[in-house]
Length: 280
Image (cartoon, rainbow, N blue to C red; front, side):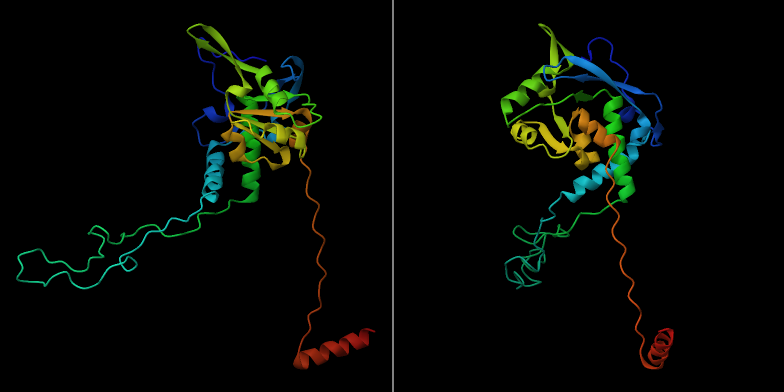
């Protein structure tokens, strides 16, 4: 399970390494180890890249992340223009005869205490990309975690009640690499970095246990998005959450709206009523 990072650097994975803006396709099956709460390997899971689209586009993921970050902006910045700051509009002194440079109002942007020229005003930064592009970017982000060996599968947390100490113990037990130090090699655990924990549906025990741990975020698999997946360094999924990502539940189609007959007026309305009476 442990990934060794000492010595010559391992080639970077798939998703985030290629500099080409074109999507890169992947067909080889990915094998990921399954661990238990003690960090011991208890099996492996094979993942077909086609379950997550089979290709990765850095450009699309970048555009979606920029959209999510723009939508988080409050846009409440506000500066005062020269017509909004306090102060008189009276000319400071006469135009000629004083020997000074000519000057007008005190509220000009060239003077201390004056208004701001072309400063920011409150605005809405939010925008939206096509839904299909957003869903595709989410699948690409998850696939990149698998290919870059930044995802870990756990069989189950098995929490009967919220307990932060137990989650901390699980994150400490799972080793994801080694770090070379002056005193020797040191194991890198999930607790040493940021991690996104994915559950199948809302798991209140896991959420309440991990919400106070710095760098740890808990989300149901159905609520994953490209920005959240890429923001955290590691991805920790339960086996049930992985199956939910492979086979997402499609929303039920909305019921068809009843078609209301068009009611016409005037001569056309009289003809319509005659036709309806004749049909009866």
